[in-house]
Amino acid sequence: MATMQSPAPEGTSLGANNTLSSSGIALGNRVKMRGFVDFRYDYSDLDGLATDENGLTIDDDARFRTAADVDFLFDFSPVTGEVHLAATSDELGLEQAFLRYNFNQDFSLTAGRQLTVLSYEKDESPNMYQTSYAYLTDVSADVQGGTSALESFIGLNSFKSTASSIDSAMTGVPAYDSYAGTNPAVNPAGFPLPSFRRNYVDGIRANFNNGQFGLVAGLHNGYFTDNDNLNDGNIGLDIAASVMIIPGLELRLGFGYENNDDYDKSIAGYNTWATDLRTALTNAGLTAEASQVPLFPKSDDISQFNAWLSYQTGGLTLAMEWDMWDMYVIDMWNLMFLANYQFNDLFALTFRYSHEDFEADVQGGGEGDSNRFTIGPMFTITDFLTIGVEYSHAELDSTITGDTSVDELYAETIFSF
Image (cartoon, rainbow, N blue to C red; front, side):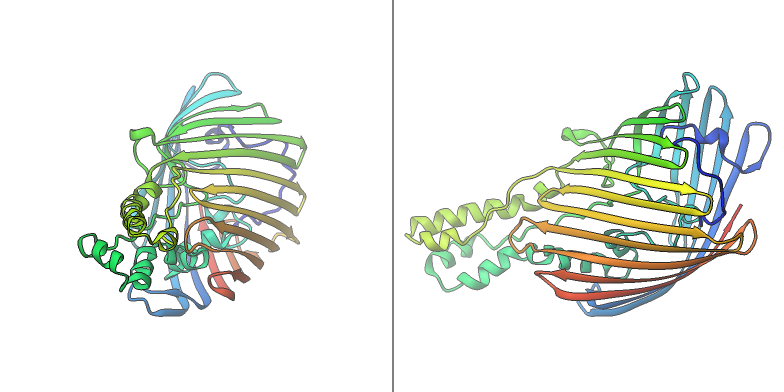
């Protein structure tokens, strides 16, 4: 965890060649190794929001987690490279692997599997000010039934049963029975929600950093999903810029975009079925009934605008982040405020507030918001061992699920080297 007191940063890190400046265990003149082992306990009181694979309500979720990460950094200047390996109890995988060609001290080109850049919070636990990420859209992925809870909150569970609802309401109408007898109801297939932040994507990126200013622009297979190709117009793009206004005060702006057909594929079968049904009902003189059969608008893109401002001096860190999202047919924005103070070499404390607001413009979709509050004390036992505790409470309000709340408790031990 980011707990050690340090002077205010003189320059921005965006676009910089951090391979050369990173610390680690020297494995020779050209290779360094670094890593961490993260063991934690998570408890979440879900207030009945989540369900398991059998549809049963999940009231709470408790578990131990273990993760490890080992990075190898290579310096063959002007070419440098990094290979990051990550392991959990479930899998061992390639997290990042990229090479960098440095044209001069300011400009470089990277190619390979790299971390996306549109987030204030870092991707790995030793670099965070608390245990969990700020937003429920991120936290839900780590909780049993969390994805289904998020879909329920937004209204996507109702979206996936649209045709079944029509079938239930119209069974017994002769024109409908005649059509449905040869054309069984086809529900929307549902589409995977994106991985909102801190993704690892394959592509190329141009980088500029002169200390005060940083700029990156990249082309990738995808940016928010696990898309692994550029076929059929699929593409991921990002651009971000930062400026160190004065030492310690940094402003960063960025935009990410992905084009893919996950959502369009999910509604294609239903829209065909619904269009033909509307025609059959209209031909039977049932125009009112036909108008009650919805068609879903097409959409094939996801975009994010990210902005954050941070100030660091001595033991104090303050940050504010704002995002605007367009996810197929879902509009969302979020806001975060964070304050961390390192009281001494042993103890630091973090306060954080985050807000998310969404509207799903689909049949069965809803609108709502969440407010999440976090307090997290952290203890630096040695230069290599950190212990953190966190409590978070979230209030949720949705037209689909009503007023609910979520309570979370975390305890974490990080050994970094």
